[in-house]
Length: 111
Image (cartoon, rainbow, N blue to C red; front, side, top):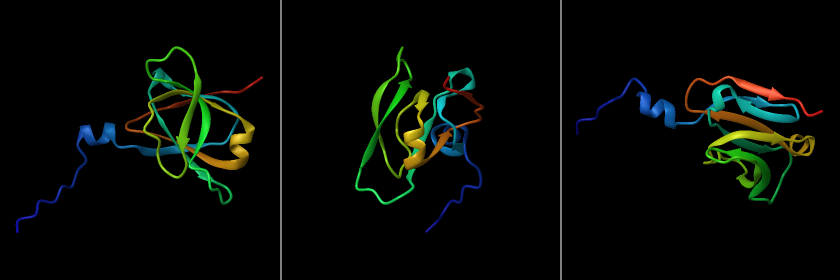
């Protein structure tokens, strides 16, 4: 059986595969430079039976944020433009953001 081994990641794979870029540790509105869409990963700090958490997000092609269910323990399939992070969320979960390509975060602190 001939088996082909791929040594590189193609541009298509790089932009569609979610790679962890960092942890969100402060309350506020989180977004990326240039309104690049991103995904989030919720890692519970204690045992939970919940399957998801409702989080206020502005999604790609939406004008305003709304509550959306985000699954726990996996990268969410949403194209998030802005994420409203509150202290309650950070007390319950480690929150990570990821994207397919190069991205730079912008964090707007809540007043």
